[in-house]
Amino acid sequence: MHGIRKTASVLAIAMTALAALSACSGNSAPESAAGFNPDAGKGAGPGQVAGSGTIAKYDPPVTVTTVRAQADVTTFQAGDTLDSNLWTKFLQDTYGFQLKNVWVTDSSGYTDRLNVTIASGDLPDFFKVNSTQLKQLVEAGSLADLTDVYGKYASPMLKSKLNEDNGITLKASTFDGKLMALPYVTATMDGAGMLWIRKDWLDNLGLSAPKTMDDVLAIAKAFKNNDPDKNGKNDTVGLGVNGSNGASGIFTGFGGLNFFLNGYHAYGKMWIEDPRDKSKLVYGAVQPEAKQALGKLQEMFKAGEIDKEFSVKTLSQLTDDIVGGKVGMVYGIMANPINYFSKSVAKDPKAKWEMFEVPSIDGTPAKTQISSGIGTFWVASKKSKYPDALVKTMDSFVQKLYGDKAEFKYMYDGPNKEHATFKYMDVQAWGARKNLDAFLAVNQALKSGDTSKLNPEQSGYYDQVKKYMGGDASQWGTYKVFGPEGSLSLTEKIVKNNSMYPDQYFSIPTDLMVQRSSTLSDLLNETYMKIILGDPLDTFDAMVQKWNQLGGEQMTKQVNEWKAKQK
Image (cartoon, rainbow, N blue to C red; front, side):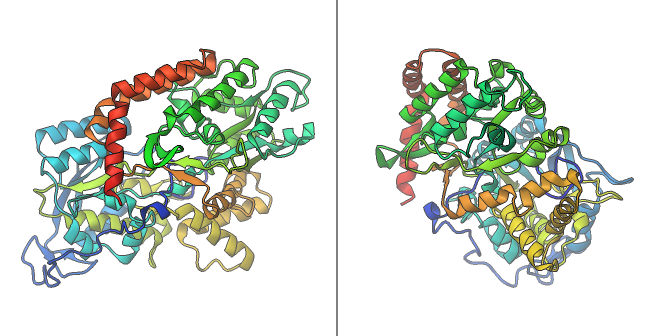
């Protein structure tokens, strides 16, 4: 989550996951650079950095160029634009550089537009890239080495934020010992899976919370057949499934089936330790455990416990079914009370959505899969005279949101806090623990009554939780996330119990992955969907053979070669 809003979209974030700290000890970020001159920049001439340390201002001012995608639903106060707003003014006043957007596009067109810019060779001073573009630019020698400027200008707070995943993403940003990018480190543990259930339906049928996968299957059957909403109609399903986006929805978080697979100790599109040989890594979606889970999903579909039309419904239509009281269970994450279930509760105050740990098929607790969080980076052009500007920009974001002089207006502003001003800043760092730390801080303040230690974002959550506790039902979503009974309390338990399983490959993609990922992903989407809808279960085995032939076997070899180098 990137801030507090008065609307239900405050927690609609890009969910991803906490990288396993125990698996990556020693992967610390480059804190300083060998050969760094502590006096560099002092007494600099025109257009050069004057002074040293985190605050170093250009005098006279300079222009620093970038390109970017404009975040969805971005609104401005009168007179403000992406080129001129409170963030750009802060950068100019503090560091002496004017940030200029060479071009701006929407999020869907950014990658293609940037590829054109990269091909032209006319790169801005700094810009955002994905893993494939980072690899391409590093190999072409087009990027500035950020090791020195990071060591000099990144504050301890920024370095702490970028190391909250134990430096995994920083390691992925480092090539031959040189820091070539700043990674996007966000509230990744929020991707921990949980099972959301209509508790009022459980109560209506006299059912207990599920403790095993067999319990989940029994509840799904009861929700389909036993009129859980007591309306006298056979109009409900047990498990809501997102089959949208060319079947790729079944591998997503909300409404996806990754967490269902996890209940069978199976995993979706990620690299895992080989259950039969812990020294090797294998791809989760093609392992035998996934075949077992698919067999159960096929049985549920045939019994009508999964919507017969799920494969042609969009995520929006699944949400409509949830709001309409047609769905009793759905797999998801901590943010779902605000971005989905709040609509259900607003329409039917009797609806009681509760979160539960993902049950297991046997006595071994299930671990829910999460991604490594590697995929977005900011880089500076090798031709740029101002690579330090990238570090200073990211540092500014951290300081104005979480530092001693943090101000709420840099997150939301306007008469009704209607402008999400954090979106104006493209270069962001949230840290892996942001939302869990906010939950802990809010609940400590609720107990003590002392709000003095809350940062602006946390204060916003605290106010909304208090409003709900005071009778404002419109704040249920925030309460169900950050309040004492909130979903983040389950996230805290999951973290403490080490019940998350991160992708065991935490590096940028190989050339082969880039070339074959789309084809192999489509193969998985198509086969999984067809099996759920009724194709013979042995179709899975043929798919595994084809997956290996199309590059999966070679990718597995490359991943294990990478793994061997991590020791």
